[in-house]
Image 1 (tube, rainbow, N blue to C red):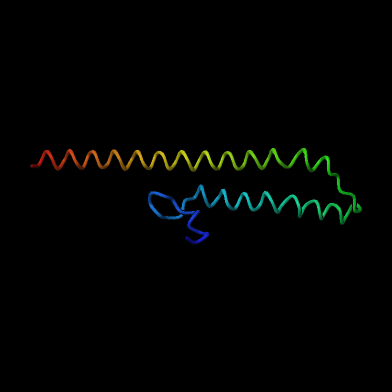
Image 2: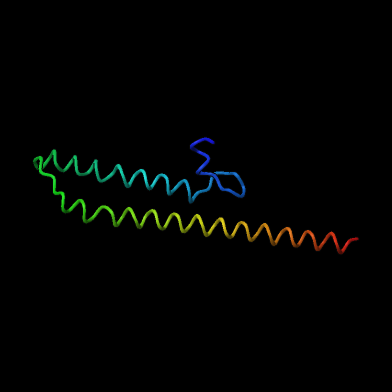
Length: 98
Protein backbone atom coordinates (compact mmCIF):
# COMPACT_ATOMS: atom_id res chain seq x y z
CA UNK A 1 0.00 0.00 0.00
CA UNK A 2 1.35 3.37 -0.98
CA UNK A 3 0.98 6.48 1.16
CA UNK A 4 -1.11 8.17 -1.55
CA UNK A 5 -3.67 5.33 -1.37
CA UNK A 6 -5.13 6.89 1.79
CA UNK A 7 -6.23 9.83 -0.38
CA UNK A 8 -8.27 7.55 -2.65
CA UNK A 9 -11.90 6.64 -2.18
CA UNK A 10 -12.53 3.13 -0.91
CA UNK A 11 -15.42 2.69 -3.32
CA UNK A 12 -14.22 4.15 -6.62
CA UNK A 13 -10.45 3.98 -6.09
CA UNK A 14 -9.96 7.53 -7.38
CA UNK A 15 -8.57 10.50 -5.52
CA UNK A 16 -11.27 12.07 -3.39
CA UNK A 17 -11.36 15.85 -3.01
CA UNK A 18 -12.35 15.62 0.66
CA UNK A 19 -9.37 13.46 1.56
CA UNK A 20 -6.94 15.56 -0.49
CA UNK A 21 -8.18 18.81 1.02
CA UNK A 22 -8.00 17.29 4.51
CA UNK A 23 -4.38 16.26 3.92
CA UNK A 24 -3.41 19.67 2.53
CA UNK A 25 -5.27 21.45 5.31
CA UNK A 26 -3.68 19.26 7.95
CA UNK A 27 -0.23 19.93 6.58
CA UNK A 28 -0.94 23.67 6.46
CA UNK A 29 -2.34 23.57 9.99
CA UNK A 30 0.88 22.09 11.31
CA UNK A 31 3.30 24.21 9.28
CA UNK A 32 1.62 27.63 9.12
CA UNK A 33 1.58 28.49 12.85
CA UNK A 34 5.22 27.51 13.16
CA UNK A 35 6.18 29.70 10.21
CA UNK A 36 4.13 32.69 11.40
CA UNK A 37 5.47 32.36 14.96
CA UNK A 38 9.02 32.20 13.60
CA UNK A 39 8.48 35.33 11.50
CA UNK A 40 6.94 37.16 14.46
CA UNK A 41 9.82 36.12 16.72
CA UNK A 42 12.32 37.35 14.13
CA UNK A 43 10.69 40.78 13.77
CA UNK A 44 9.56 41.42 17.37
CA UNK A 45 12.33 39.80 19.30
CA UNK A 46 12.73 36.20 20.22
CA UNK A 47 9.93 35.83 22.73
CA UNK A 48 7.70 32.79 22.37
CA UNK A 49 4.34 32.91 24.17
CA UNK A 50 3.77 29.29 25.14
CA UNK A 51 0.38 29.98 26.75
CA UNK A 52 -1.09 31.61 23.65
CA UNK A 53 0.24 28.80 21.48
CA UNK A 54 -1.18 26.03 23.66
CA UNK A 55 -4.59 27.71 24.00
CA UNK A 56 -5.15 28.61 20.34
CA UNK A 57 -3.57 25.79 18.37
CA UNK A 58 -5.37 22.55 19.42
CA UNK A 59 -8.91 23.88 18.92
CA UNK A 60 -8.33 24.74 15.28
CA UNK A 61 -6.59 21.45 14.63
CA UNK A 62 -9.44 19.44 16.18
CA UNK A 63 -12.04 21.38 14.18
CA UNK A 64 -10.16 20.77 10.93
CA UNK A 65 -9.67 17.06 11.50
CA UNK A 66 -13.20 16.45 12.78
CA UNK A 67 -14.77 18.30 9.86
CA UNK A 68 -12.68 16.43 7.31
CA UNK A 69 -13.29 13.03 8.85
CA UNK A 70 -17.04 13.61 9.06
CA UNK A 71 -17.15 14.75 5.43
CA UNK A 72 -15.20 11.73 4.22
CA UNK A 73 -17.29 9.30 6.26
CA UNK A 74 -20.54 10.81 5.03
CA UNK A 75 -19.41 10.70 1.39
CA UNK A 76 -18.30 7.06 1.66
CA UNK A 77 -21.64 6.12 3.24
CA UNK A 78 -23.55 7.88 0.46
CA UNK A 79 -21.44 6.17 -2.23
CA UNK A 80 -22.11 2.75 -0.69
CA UNK A 81 -25.85 3.45 -0.54
CA UNK A 82 -25.87 4.62 -4.15
CA UNK A 83 -24.08 1.45 -5.29
CA UNK A 84 -26.53 -0.70 -3.35
CA UNK A 85 -29.50 1.09 -4.91
CA UNK A 86 -27.96 0.76 -8.38
CA UNK A 87 -27.40 -2.96 -7.82
CA UNK A 88 -30.99 -3.44 -6.67
CA UNK A 89 -32.33 -1.54 -9.68
CA UNK A 90 -30.23 -3.55 -12.11
CA UNK A 91 -31.34 -6.81 -10.43
CA UNK A 92 -34.99 -5.79 -10.75
CA UNK A 93 -34.56 -4.82 -14.39
CA UNK A 94 -32.96 -8.15 -15.27
CA UNK A 95 -35.73 -10.02 -13.45
CA UNK A 96 -38.36 -8.04 -15.35
CA UNK A 97 -36.85 -8.90 -18.74
CA UNK A 98 -36.69 -12.65 -18.02
